[in-house]
Length: 426
Image 1 (cartoon, rainbow, N blue to C red):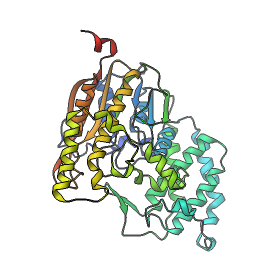
Image 2: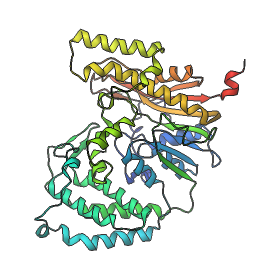
Image 3: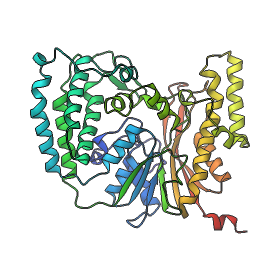
Image 4: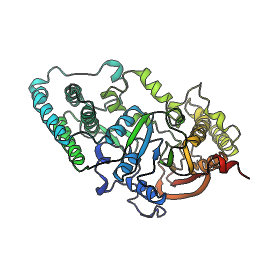
């Protein structure tokens, strides 16, 4: 598919042929597998290459690489997304064992979730419940999820248990919850008093088992729970041939809300201190994960394109008389975001092989007082400042801004790392 054709309305949709493994668990913000294939082919990657996704989210790049026979590495700071990526690329579980486990659990708990046996509903601990979006799930659907979770936790085989837990995460969002994604996460007006949790979960597990049954062999894939701004501690020097990724965009989207329900349900977030620690591990992209001690903005203190943009946002705030705590942070978050990305690009260099190709899927934004942020253009300039060669900034698609109503560009920033030796040669 020609990624330069913005008129193709299916560019960002999951194609039917791509559903295996990808559809185990993904969220609406994921970019499509066919875009990964486009750049795998463009970069000429083979079974002898190693592909990295440093912001791997729910694993689109590393799952597609595995399906294409290419070794891959992913890193992800969000606990739930990291768990999903790791589980989606663990293909060693026997599909018959998966089916038997699902049947065994269904038989064991079916009676416990019938209406006559649900007078005493299981509940989350108060601290955990406080993390959920209000009305995100009803009491009875939550009870069913918690009964199912308890049964899954009793499974002794760890890879199998992870797969069953991931199916529960999928079911909790798509069947049990009142959540809606458009693409912002919100609460549906139609609140579910009940939901067929066990049936939906069983169907999801059977679909996962069917995908596993199609596998003969697969290349090695690993996913680390790691901040993308600091990769040198886990990856070897000059070990990566290519990068295909999509980092967060600079806007007011609180990415931690997207996976909040399943993160709490599976125990990745137990109380507000867990949530704060989680936010501190992320690239700063919105005011809700910016902290007074942050220093990534120092990375771009001498990058005029970023300092001028931040000054424009602050000037607009003052002109409009906006004085909320969040609005006062807009200019700083902008600097923290691009500083964090500069830190990422800088720390990525030692692990790249000379000639490594990189593709960053990013989008223009206008969330901060309608000041246009040319994300791709700015990231290309920052990468070039650090010694990368900018091969192109390719239009992937356009999308309608929910803030201004204008068409915003979503682009692929195509970079090449020449290597330190070639970089320093005259």
